[in-house]
Amino acid sequence: MKKRIVEGIEIEASTGNVFADLKLADADKLKIKSGLTIEIAKAIRERGLTQEEAARRMGLTQPKVSALLRGEFSNFSERKLMDCLNRLGYDIEIRVHATQAPVGHLTLTHA
Image (tube, rainbow, N blue to C red; front, side, top):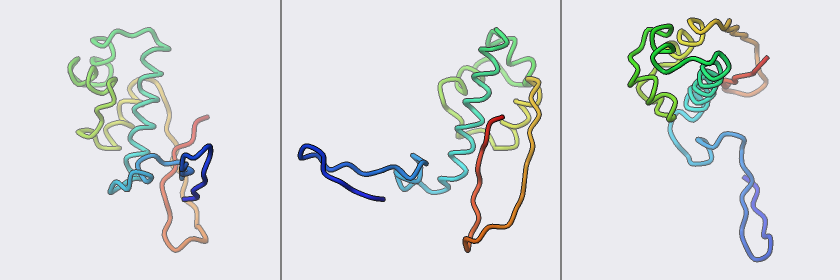
């Protein structure tokens, strides 16, 4: 990451993935899971669902929905989060393509 000094303060530019910036293991997966969680929260809000209604639609308990909306997604797999979005009326497309990098990465894009 690039560093620069602004008014005597060292500033480090982000990679675009806060989990990678914090040097957490599985940073790409954490970014995907957080992005899916954000989309779930948006879907619940846009549909005007209560946590109980959202829980029924997603096949979860209300306390699990509450935890998810507080950003506690570590107990959810990427697949379960995608299933929740499907149950809230969202399609998910997965696109695979070759990269020039030695190792590819995961990316979440929004329509």
